[in-house]
Structures are given as C-alpha cells and as structure tokens.
Length: 146
Image 1 (tube, rainbow, N blue to C red):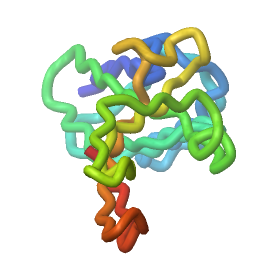
Image 2 (cartoon, rainbow, N blue to C red):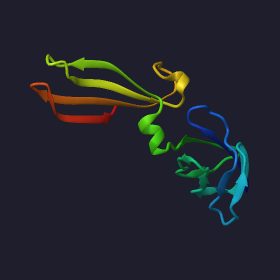
Image 3 (cartoon, helix red, strand yellow):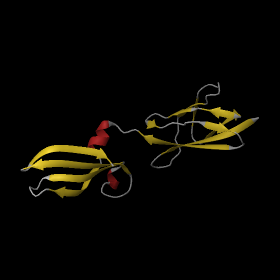
Image 4 (spheres, helix red, strand yellow):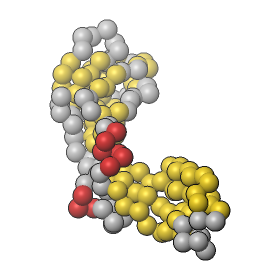
C-alpha cells in the first residue's frame, strides 16, 4: 500500500512556505530539492525524514504512515547571526533602579524587524537582566532568557 504524505515546511514567524528544501525521505530514495508544500509516497511504516533549509533550524522527529492521506507540518525557525541577536532591533523596558540610581533589573526584547521594536509584535527572544550593587557599584550582572 502506498500512502501520500504532504509536507508543509513553513517559517516560524511568517508561516510562509519555504523554497529550496532539501528533502531526504529516509526510505531509500535519493535526496530531492523541493518547494513547500510537497508530497512523497511512502509504504506503511515509521520513517525519520530529514528536511533542511539554508538559514533555518528545525527537524522532523518521525512520520508514521498508517492511513491515506498523511499531512506533516514542519515549522522552522530562521537562524540569527550573532551580530543580529546582540546589536540589532533591541528594546529595553521595565527598568528598576536602586536607591543609588543604578539599573538593577529590566526586560530586553529582540525583534525580527526594526518596525516592531517596542511593540508586542515579532518578538524573537525576551531576556530578563538583574544586577546587584553596593554603594553605586555593580557587583554582579546576569541576563537570562525568559
């Protein structure tokens, strides 16, 4: 029995289907370069296909093929370069200051685009910063992902 499996490979933020997907079915067939959405015919069983898109991160854990049709939704997150995540599209808010006027905590958010900075839209990451101080001097500083 052959079962048609539809793969929807989409961007995590925009939900747009991705192109230039390297698809390895893990059923003995050759790797294919496809655009999402795409289909592949499998025999019944469990498979661990590989889906790769340049600049994205994510994976398919397993595909269980037991009835016709099967749809697999794959959401991939765009990889950010270090420069982007450290220096672009940042917003700091919710500041807390000590009696010595030293910043001791705040929220830092990183956005996917400059138009969204300072809003609740397109937030990629949120961090919480805390610091300890004595007599106006910072002793410790910590930033953790919220």
